[in-house]
Length: 492
Image (cartoon, rainbow, N blue to C red; front, side, top):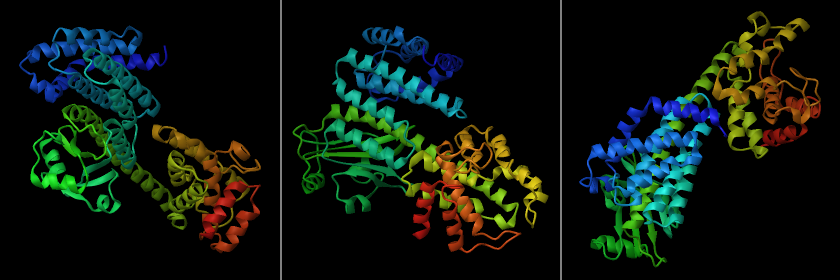
């Protein structure tokens, strides 16, 4: 079976925390509106017993997914009224609460192993998704296509680490699922106001200037109460709201609070002016599921960004410490990074490649920690024997970086930075495309920055002369493609 070992690890992890997970899950699930509404149907003790059965079956499904024990357990509990919820939406919310908890637990357990973390998260998400499908089939109260849309987007959301991209994805899911013509996603900022982060069908000037205080207006009221607000025929509507609707030519509107751990994250505002179908309570309940997914994803995204900023700050500090060893190279790594990133962007490289280039550029000289001062700081030219010692710094870099799981992707980039395009460089004598493109980019940036900076044995070379030197070594030391991109960058 695929990923058998990690499935066993997950099972052992969940079994070891069985009681704490059930305690936390049950404490959260009784706050779901459907459970509060139907809390008199069965006792909490009975419901908790049912939850334990579901979770045991869930653990078994991780090892043997083909048995679908969780599906069988859910069907039995639903038909025997062991779940205090009157519709599928409430049960699905409960399963999503469980999913959020389990993703958090495996993320903490595998935080130092990105590949295992991705695999573990996918296993948890897929197993819960199967149970959600089962629940929707049993209740027969929701169009499966709508739930499928939310589940599909839920899987995507949890993997996005850019807040801007995440907000666009949430809004896209909401518009597709609800058939809205106009929509906005507002997030709460530290000043107590909510601002539009993503919008569809709203004039740009309004989207950029709008701000709403919690408790004020429709969106602010939804944020304060934590309850959706429906504005349609058949629902009470104050006169000022009617005028607001007419002004925007809206026939129906819906504001959905986005929460995470009972804290408001923002509000999802949806409107219709063409669609015949007006928003109703069924729409509100289904979109609350999407909002629950969105709240968890936004919270995780913010946490990831904070960790990323802290991590990058540590890298910058480490690079500065390396440069500070020699006052002639102060700021060298930072300047190389700026040049390398500019070259990469000129080559239309994006996303993870840019991130790797940033980190590798900042740490490309980390191996020089292992070079003795009398060689590294020598004011004159190096002897052949001394240069052989210098050539070992990529090996020292590997020995340092290989112990840091989050930096393993940049190890080959740093290691091969001194390879030459024609194969005459070091450490392994690689040539042309066998050298990582990130290494080829940093090599040009590093050489240019070094030539145009003062050194103890020479003064800085004029920029024009350094550029000519880069051009002269195109095709031998440097990749011609990288050189062309570099020339465009320095020309700008």
